[in-house]
Amino acid sequence: MNKPLTLNRTYPFERSFGGQAIAFRLMTGKDRARILKLAGKLHHEDLLFLRMDITQKAVVDTWCDNIKLGRSITVLAENAKNEAIGYGTVHHDELLWTRHLGEMRLLVAPDYRSCGLGKVLATELAQIAGAQHLQRLVVHIPRDKPHVQHMLIRLGFNAEALLTDWLMDREGKLHDMLVMSRWLHES
Image (cartoon, rainbow, N blue to C red):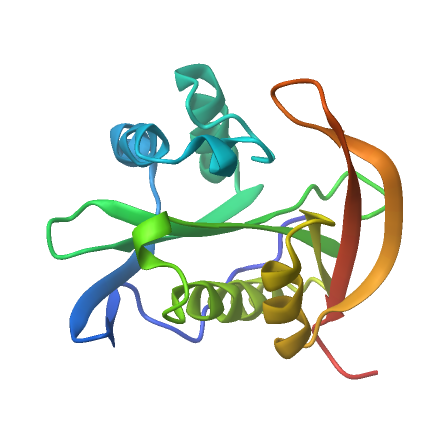
């Protein structure tokens, strides 16, 4: 049974990054075109390890369906032109043995990296996951992304497992996957 979701934050809200105002709001089904436009601006390297191929309309439609069903909550970051420049998603499924876990998915457009935007999104996701009464937040990242790993460690995530040749990029090359997690509540 779904527990009521009470967020500690009112959306939308704004933060300044390098003098530029960035708005954060919850994604809805009306954001399909924004996500597809963001995907179209990503570099080839960014597309290699997407958990979902957000360049495909059907995939974005499924994502929007998961939002409508309450399986995913996504925070969009938008610039002054109302363009999506990043997102963070908490995805969970109450029917699984892992129903106490939320999976974090995070993407920041190349021009907005290294300014703290990813940290704000990850922090928001941890708060949302806590409000969903989840116990742990899990993230899957390619092992060869140490900058992402270091950001997650600073946010309280720990390495849980290294899965050899677990990821396959778009060109068929295998990569190791690092599973990291963070407890949301102290025991």
